[in-house]
Length: 299
Ligand SMILES: [Zn+2]
Image 1 (cartoon, rainbow, N blue to C red):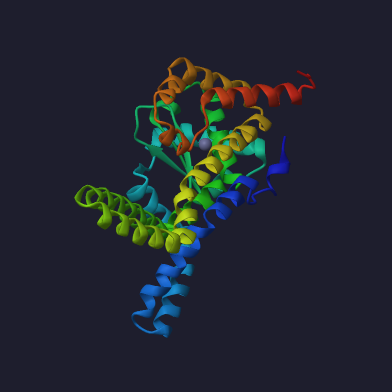
Image 2 (cartoon, rainbow, N blue to C red; image 1 turned 90 degrees about the vertical axis):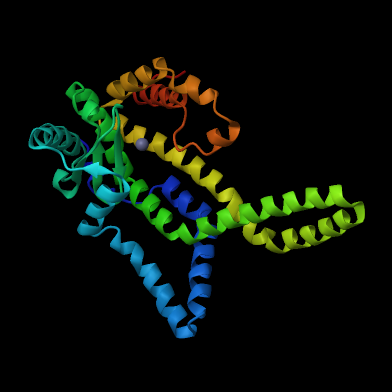
């Protein structure tokens, strides 16, 4: 089966789109790091910027990944019993893709749900409940996670999270400033009409000056979330290509019956626009369409 995947660990279109949509925040981050560095002089700023740029590579070093897994993602190493089960499931999935299973590290996510996740360059995690599922279903979950790794979604997401950190801080600051401007403006309008009008002119001027920087940063989280949702569909495609389409569909159908989409419908539009996963219905529809296409059925 698909040896095709062995040579295909490359950046996928949605991951590249993620980088593009986050570019304003990444550049803003670089600018912030540079500006802070200039407080100590140009040389310090240059060293600081280069050091910050190089720091992203550290996230993929084995020891750093271990620290990230345990401290940031709150994962733990599997027990000997869990290791035996997890390794055999993971090996079967990787064998189908022609990938070396040993190039990944296996972790347990202590959670009651049925879930699995992929993070960084090599981390694959599963919940104890998912590990107890019938093997083909657990393998389908893991095949989806392997899809994220093969298309480099996880590496790109980790790098973006790291490099966008100063930009995200700026995003929060801009949001707070805009909220303050609005609050003060409303207050002044109630105090006196002329003072309020003067304030609106000043606020308008400030907004026009910061808009070229603020708008891309304010829009970025929504575009990034949209590209993350597309990455989920791409990872489903990999599971399907590895022969786990039926099992993945069964898991998604169970999610649908459990009311996942119904709960999502009750969320605000703002939350839905920031969701990192598409609706279960959308994932099932895509799986069905892809399955029908691969079987040569026209609809
Ligand atoms: Zn996923």
